[in-house]
Length: 427
Image: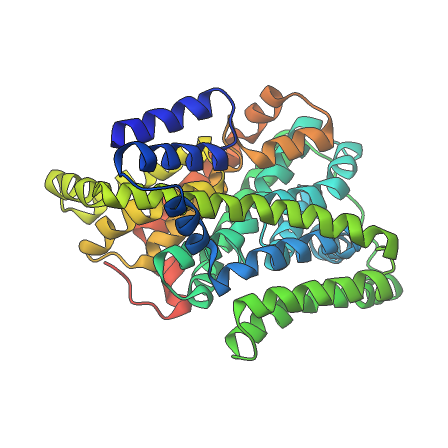
């Protein structure tokens, strides 16, 4: 039964079938062939997989991110950050990274962060002495914080599967997200120093500073509204997504006026497609997981790994290797949905906090956004800069190395992620 499940899944993936369909077809075929059940079981498990109130946060945050990208919020964030960092060595690259961190605290999506900030910064960086390939690589790498700094769409996916608190995992992402940003800033500074990138003059006259501040204030208070509302108990993470969407719509249409009424149907349609892809993956993964559970695969894998070693340091290393490889080939939602039910029980049995496991998943999936062959942020960066994929892969390597270092620091120094949420360290 299980060989048929995996063989059919990988064959379908190899011939180019979308992952959601490959998961669903492989699971449905196995159910019919080996479990003497009708396709009604497939429909039931798919429905149960997405019948969750917290999952409603996903379409809302996707819509909020798209509205913000179209509504001029990203432009105001860049202008504000440039006041502080624009004149430093490597200033424009640092602006791109810090602005991505701000935007990540609003959108919760890596590709959306790369597209919103990259569309503004790549051309600007190129005009001021940065290579086109480095500029694209910088915004692609900076986009990876989109799912580490809260709010985060993959965090919602993980928490639903792991039955953990979304708001707590959001807090756990703050430390690793800031550390990822700092590591990329160091890479950008070294690039600018080694390539003698000229400094950029920034207008810091009181009139200009006040103008930029008042224009950007609506964008800056958005993370405060979203995260402050969640942690004060005013609304849940799901309701925060709805509030963020409404806020982005009002600011984009009536305050900044960059978002036209005629643009709204297109933005909503694009958001619906993006949300539908994730929800379909969640539904088919649920059926796939049902077959795995019936075949007792999670228990067998857990027993095999624990028989190999019960040393949590080695098991965490194995977790990183497995998830990092998966992130190279699967998108975040698919990898998290597929691997969480299998690997989480192994780590929790040896005393590792499920929140630490969650952050390891999330950071790995962020790194997966800039690792070939799937790396979504790389493709977004290529499209923005109009360069070849192999060119950006070479330029993004220093950022990739920096983020892998952060990954292992997050893994083996759990206080980096857990202390701010008040979660006891695993070791």
